[in-house]
Amino acid sequence: MIQSQRTTADAATAAHDRVFRALRTRIMHGDIAPGEALTLRGIGREFDVSMTPAREAVRRLVAEGALFLSSSGRVSTPELSNERIEELAALRALLEVELASRALPRAHMALIDRLQTINTSVAEMITKRDAVGYIRTNLEFHRTLYLRAQAPAMLAIAETVWLQLGPTMRALYGRLRRTEPPHNHRLIIAALKAGDEPGLRLAVRSDVTQGLHLLTS
Amino acid sequence: MIQSQRTTADAATAAHDRVFRALRTRIMHGDIAPGEALTLRGIGREFDVSMTPAREAVRRLVAEGALFLSSSGRVSTPELSNERIEELAALRALLEVELASRALPRAHMALIDRLQTINTSVAEMITKRDAVGYIRTNLEFHRTLYLRAQAPAMLAIAETVWLQLGPTMRALYGRLRRTEPPHNHRLIIAALKAGDEPGLRLAVRSDVTQGLHLLTS
DNA sequence: CATAGTTTGATGTGATCACAAATGGCAAAA
DNA sequence: TTTTGCCATTTGTGATCACATCAAACTATG
Figure 1 (cartoon, rainbow over the protein chains, first blue to last red):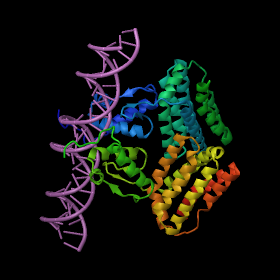
Figure 2 (figure 1 turned 90 degrees about the vertical axis):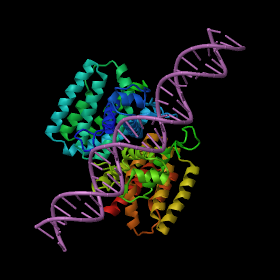
Figure 3 (figure 1 turned 90 degrees about the horizontal axis):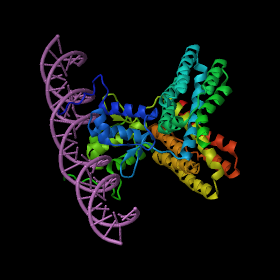
Figure 4 (figure 1 turned 180 degrees about the vertical axis):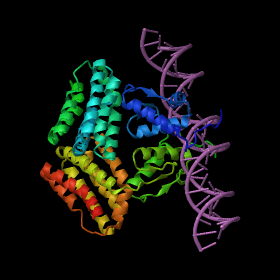
């Protein structure tokens, strides 16, 4: 087979973008362990593309902080120091409290219903001890809320923070053995219903930083 | 000439990284106007590399939001809407107030002296009406302060925001005809000297958002 | 003169190749 | 047994090419 590339105007996305999106979702959801190595040829083989699109996807992910590039050019998921984890958690708190606060005046009943539905899934993942599923549904909960903030740049930055924390969160929650339903999520929903901004800010901050406390202990 | 690539262990940085850094600095400092188009072959010709490193550099910059990628793959600097500018300014305020606050307890006299020196350059650029020089020295002022916060992830995100605002700031300050010295910078320095955290937060916020007000008016 | 169709040049994309460096395993020596 | 040196394989990098697409200039037609 020679030169059977997809055309750019194809219904399907360009190859490098397809690879990029797939890897990004995988990393954000914690499918890949911290420190796990990736090779360009390996990525190319998996997605049935040459090294070129694989390299471009990797470059984008490195730029987002989702992948770590060693001095010799080898790529792997990052192994975060405790200081870095604390800093990223602080960033989440800073950004997500602001996003939630901006979403509050726009949060109508339909949104709250949807959040409650997602929250059911989150609880289900916890009881099933499905770490990846928990991370995925938990992020979906947060993203659904923040989309209402109408702040795309801020949301994009929050997502890159999630991305950097992805592999570490997986390793963290994978070790965790708890079955409590998501208490803070219910506080968030309650504050949304009540239009209670200080309560909402506090609930979001607690939800975001609770994972950190589990680590330092 | 065939296969005369630099080796990765060379003293010189890899080609794609060299191109990336050069373009990034250019964009952040406002050397490139909003909406200006770039071509891979053009970049390659300018830096004397092939399309491959040029493409990788562009991919990284697109991932950082420094460049806009049209649906047909053409790249250009972004033309920001007013909403986007306001959002990015809000992000700057959020992040930089936090960074300054974290730097405050670590700010010793040597740092303050250096900030004052940089501030002299800033004032000089203003009187010379050198827009690019003003942006460069102004960012140097902020970066010098925030480096003391010991929060690399947060500083990195603040820099990507600067990057996105680069071309627009240039267009903005280029139109601007003012010769006032940087008042807010002096407030920042005074607050640092006094160890006055609320004053510092306010001064940083004012400094960051004042540019916005010049736009909306 | 204006507008629609056409064509030519420019541009991005992905595949493939040659090369240098790094990595890991293996063997030989202490 | 441990350590050191060497070699083969793997891996990233950059150049080059063929191709599809796009944009702009140009031409023909009304």
